[in-house]
Image (cartoon, rainbow, N blue to C red; front, side, top):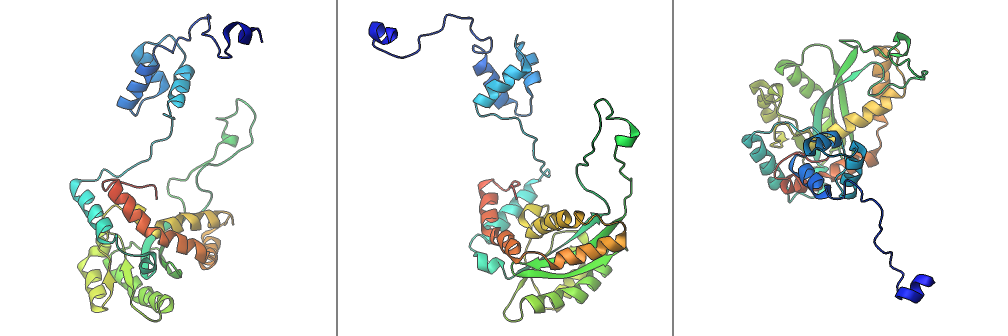
Length: 292
């Protein structure tokens, strides 16, 4: 009330206390972070010789909207790779979500026995490096090698293999499972087939078989898992299978088959219907990796 009576305002007056040390250096902190994106608050403090803590630098960056995050990894695309990705994204930019549903996506993956990712342990303070509290990772863990295919309306066949996946084996897998999957998923109407650019896929023996069967093949760009919905399916499948805690490869295969058959059709529809958006994002990102 006294302030209003004397100043006719409730605005806070400028403080008379000590100025914050980082105030004058805020612009320099932000400019350096914008120029050197892969830096840290500690490096900024050292490079600018600031008499403040790294935590203070962190707060200034956060306030400016520059948050510390783990950098995503991208394949070092060559100009040819970028052109191929842009050609694919532009070439199929007019495809509707319903058209993408007529594509049979295929890929191979490996599922290891045991837990994946971070392993949690309950341990007392200071015991992090005691052997009984440390997890062990085998140099060559037991695993299943799998070929599979899927579409926006359902999953196709699975094939488990132990031999090296070369061109002859790839042709055998396709002749055994691909057409059978297509007939079940697309009993009427035409369909397309997608596979990546691995040498066994692009080999003469496989390409000749695909041509002889009259299979329409998408011109898929190299190093583009972000444009392949089946990659999302593999990640989802591994997460579901891990919850079963298989004790051996026989159990692991049973759980893989079980969870593969139980895949939610809504999930498949969602990841395949995202293809128009993926193509649009690749164009917007000048051919580089997108968040899918």
